[in-house]
Length: 106
Image 1 (cartoon, rainbow, N blue to C red):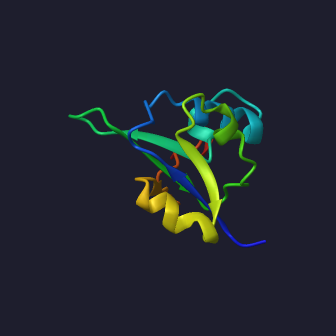
Image 2: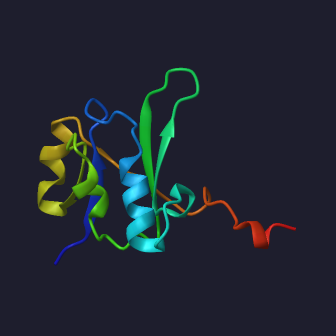
């Protein structure tokens, strides 16, 4: 199987953060979006959403299943070109937006 990349469509995404909540519940066992492997970022002035995911994403696809707007999807390399032409954007992968748990803050 080839690598799957997460894409989102900015015109479909409302920024509701359902994907964050579903991810946190699935992978951390708690309803805490700070522990999710996906993050919805809202532009501070425009309010437009964008997404970022983390290196430890399990690709369980619970984020995709939770999105009632069908604004996110995983795709294998064979489908990337078509998605890009349709306005889908690959979700960047980061490791620096995580909050430290309270117990680790000095």
